[in-house]
Image (cartoon, rainbow, N blue to C red):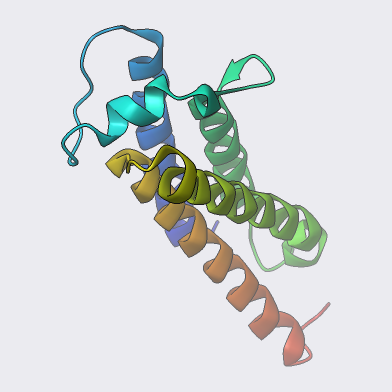
Length: 140
């Protein structure tokens, strides 16, 4: 088990879970930015393929948590591709959503930013750890 990756996944699951709950209700959201979360929630980009964006975050962080729990030296080689794919997709999605916040919606959701930072941290952790594992000949 990779404890740091599991912590990132649990934190991301909490953030995405709160956002999913907030997206399903009509009440005001708790947000560090003045009206950014409300503007993002009200935008046309809050739903993709008929599903609220935070649901994708919940699924992403849940999957990441499962992979983090399975990660051990004996399974590292088998989990290399799924970990890279999941964290790569998480970063790509977060970058796209961050772009939308900055240049299209022109509002910042503090929870979304926290989720993006967690996705980048997971990506760097996975890619750095896998690089270190396989660049030094420990690729059993």
